[in-house]
Length: 595
Image (cartoon, rainbow, N blue to C red):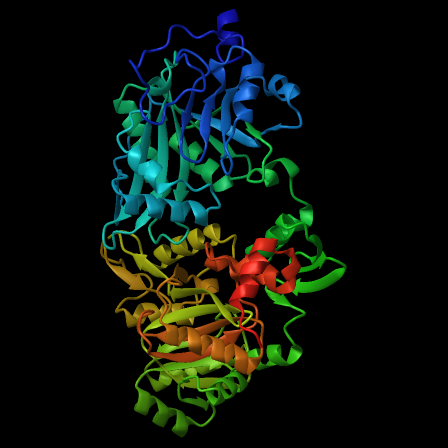
């Protein structure tokens, strides 16, 4: 009984460790000269420190305190965290996560194979770059791509990625640690880390497939268990682990108090939790700079920022620096179009809906049209690619639910480009794509849409959902199907013609490749409106080509949609330039021409 009680505590002395010869495997460097105790493994984002290999708490505390800059070390398998925290209460904190275990001796692989994607090992630097992109989208610590590459044959670390069969895009990733390759683990265990799925993946069950693949990998290598640590409030992930047969075990993780972990040990005010992602990204950036934040109305996204005796009220990216006149121009799409056209920005031909004969002639002339309310946001009431008079009348009726005045425009076939301009400078550019489903040969289209909508909502904190309305049904019919039809396996179907993120669209960064003429058009539009922060929507053929037409301007662009571009940083720079580091201000001042 004493041995069982001490197996994972500080009193547990490990038996003789496996010798690696003259040197340990890559990535399995020890913090002590002897390999038989005080074991850790460098995972790129930080070290995984095996708490059960430390005989006393003091050496473990010293090990954790050697954490490098911009790293997140994790001391895992802590049986008695209160003892460890008592040695350094100002330095350490108990991670608010649960530990789950999968018994590999009883685990049975699924007979269902992934559809539309496959799981493979990380095999190139480009894979590593894509993994970092997914890490960043999930606010995880990024890893030097060269670390992934140099450790691709590491026997202690295993990296799997999910790849789209059609596009070759990396959809998700997971990392595994073989404990026996790091130290002579008497329990013959393994662990899962950094499960991350691209929030815009079109395929279901990518996370499940990665977890299963890693479990089968360790099972084939004779491991007895596979453990993982999951945040206590990550209900979606916990539900997956429960379904796969994981169960809770009484081990804990301890981390160091640093900037990366700050939210975990300081907690969040109740109002902060109610903020949407578009307000929170700004609030978090302000707090990082020491700017005072007062939440005025969390559900509405209203807050006040105070710095150096000056206060600015904001609603997400809309601040007091945007005038009421500029806001009213953006609100009236006809007024926006007229002003930007006078500034030399290309605009589509447009009429006001009302006369059936005029509508019929406009449709006959352009073949495909766009119907949208003169006022509105978040894509509500917009119909794209309308090709018949009957559909046009129905679309106008829907648009009138948002605004009595409805606009009809010629349809420019291509991609929807959102350009974020702050202080009349380009900060981010991204192509927005309408939602697509992929058939499995068994599930009705309506169910596939519901599943995709649920995944999009989960990935965006409920901000993105696919409406089950006439516009969705029309898009499905345009693809040659009815809502109850079975979409053939592997076939994709666009289920909305609009690419707005709030109606299920996805966003893909193109900041580094956008054509200068597109940038000039976006900046010219914001100057014509005289608005300091704006999301300019253009329809384009290709982000690397100059062809475009202006669609509209948004006075409250969602900055969180454009990570990793520094949208929140540039927004706070605009409001409080003195909060910028002195070196950054000097560079900015040198770059600005003298007036």
